[in-house]
Amino acid sequence: MKKICLLIVLLFAAWTTSFAQCGKKLVIASSKTEHLDDQGNVTRTDVENAVVTITKTDIKITVADPGGSHEMTGAIKSDTCNWTAAYKEGKTVIKANITGMNGEEKPVTITITGTNGKVILIFAIDDEPGDDIRIAADKFEEAA
Image (cartoon, rainbow, N blue to C red; front, top):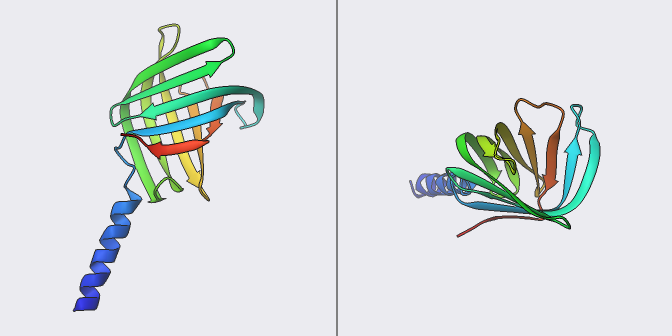
């Protein structure tokens, strides 16, 4: 009986850890942005500091380059979150409406994937295929 109780506790702990970042405030920071064509090939690389802050309801993207700082914000419409190892292995897909620097709102899909401890974010404007943005996280962490 003790073994069964211990097994249940261990399984619950593993399950809780796998969803630890879901619904939490996350910060993803990167120093390089890659623009992709519709086949996923890199068409342009920009050296710029990008910070993506994600809460349960909102997303904010701040990009700083030699030309200044730009910010985009939006409301999250839906998300799916499935991580087997918090911040290392798994995937989150977010559907949101982002308001850009020109004030225009666009529907976007943001996919965050963790593989072998490396976290990649793909930002795709739903009605503009072939101009996706990819960033590799230099930092991916839970924020207070």
